[in-house]
Amino acid sequence: MSEKVTIIGGGLAGCEAAWQVASRGGHAAIFEMKPVKLSPAHTTDALAELVCSNSLKSESLENASGVLKEEMRAMGSLVVKAAEATRVPAGGTLAVDRAAFSAFIMSALEQAGVEVIRGEVAEIPAARPLVIASGPLTSDALAASIQSLIGVQSLNFYDAVAPIVYKESIDMDSAFSASRYGKGGDDYINCPMTKEEYEVFYNELIKADTARAREFEDMKSFEACMPIEVMAQRGPQTLLFGPMRPVGLTDPRTGKRPFAVIQLRRENLEGTLYNIVGFQTRLTFAEQKRIFPMIPALKRAEFARLGKLHRNSYIDSPRLLTEAQQLRSDHSIFFAGQITGVEGYCESAASGILAGINALRLVRGQSVLCPPEATITGALMRHISKAQGPFTPMNANMGLLPPETGKDRRAKQSKKAVEAILSWTETLAN
Image 1 (cartoon, rainbow, N blue to C red):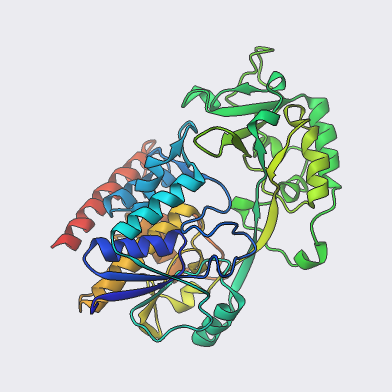
Image 2 (tube, rainbow, N blue to C red):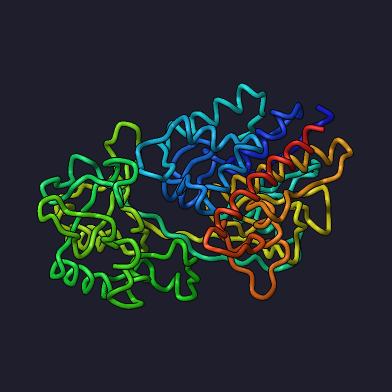
């Protein structure tokens, strides 16, 4: 018990932090407010609940998402292990069955001896070291306590969730199964639209009412999770280069590429639920039920979940945190996950991995560490702790890494990142 680390929050970051502590011989205790209190976006009492998409993005080492997962594997990630064990078909994307994913993680933590305490944490506890991984939907009471601790205003943006439909309600006579460019098999259900159908849909979308408009007058949408109706306001071609892009797909009924395509991705292992990819929205429920069935394949769609919008908060990390995720004013406190300004499931989990490792190192009297800047994890941690100018959330991307030249520059960056993380993890074992 002398090597105990206390963690606030049972999301991806909190669970990864606890796993790192427990798997390295320490004792981890997670405080999780569910089911005593639920945030506006959560619906279950499970740890590691995936709120938005069920996708952890690409596995390809040609992009930052794939490289980040490889780095997380090297660091012993529980999230990646759980995702691989509960994956559903999604082409080159790592998508999971949400319920099975959470169950896998909870079982692993239980077997590792992680203590889970249910109930809201209204004030920052005295226990140290402390990892605050309360997430972007931190409760008002805890947010006020954090505010008192850091002495500056939190920043925030709004995050939208995409609808989910029942497979049996999809009109397969108006759809076809395929993955873009044939990668991954027939993992997606594709809903094609003609030019005329698209124009009707688009015109209704841009004039649709949005949910509780006055609440979101100052809404700052994160570019990577922008509501589809906000995207549409940028022009009639925007969606055709975004979530409704038809490239890489051929409609077998016509032998041609459709004018527009909406992709549906499997939500669970049974294949009974499908997510409307890229259709995160803040439309009212009534408007969603009116407009989305204008997509021919969804004309009789039954919704298991409608889209919604919620506020995501994050701290001003460049002014507050070190690259090791320590609070500059109190090195016994670490922040992890989306509350730090990293954006994305794997980014949050990687943040939790590092916070857990460093919290345990601190209690053992060892120096805290950050992966090399040649790694996605290290580069992202340096970005959120040193960004200049107005701070906004950041996804993993190759632009964070030291630049390379030539046509194969990304391959060089990927290779160096993997080599660097493997070398770094060896230092942890010594």
